[in-house]
Length: 274
Image (cartoon, rainbow, N blue to C red; front, side, top):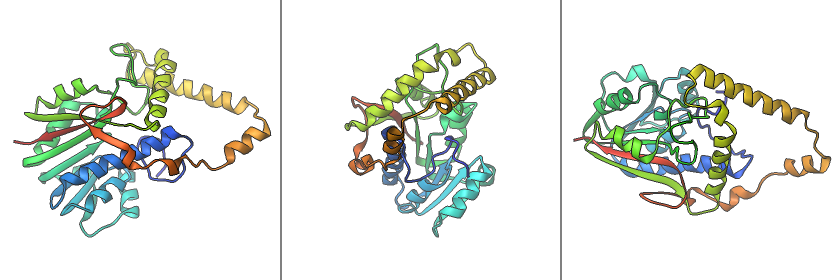
């Protein structure tokens, strides 16, 4: 499966601290979710490449990972296996019920977020938990005037807007923040703030989706062309070819998930079915 950036695929190659932070954040979110799934029947909705579904299978009674992409499901089936683990496309789950549903980094991709939440609610057993993670747009976008600069995202949320959406369907909703006390999180925050400014002319709220995507792709092409035309000193090339050692300085334990923190990048909502 080609790594387009739409789905997280595990690898050991990180070009910078921001990429490594994103990787650790994905892993830490699933580690946190493992606390909810012991002995439970679990659905990982929007499982992508399947690494997180496999993590959940270590604690759960059974886990099904589903995705809209047949390519993603094929990749997951070929790379992750366990006696209590299955991968299916979304239409294949029919009317099954689950004790816990995880859906990480998915809601920002769906065209109708109300239908998405309503559909997940129907799949939950009474007393079941729904866990949803998504980027926090606070540092990523100018409020009211800017659409997502990630071409795969249709909408992004603040803690408040995510809470209001979920409270339409669940009476018990808690929204936590995902971040870190280490300097690693600042790399990602600074990256997103730069993206916010750089892409603003291409992402104004007045643009329909096709126009936004066209402008963002054009901007990306311009930067790629600029990088090709740049000539770098041999010494700089040699230095950049050296393996980075920053990955040994941090681990998933540096990622925190809690109600309040100074530096955060993402949100984790926990909903309980009555």
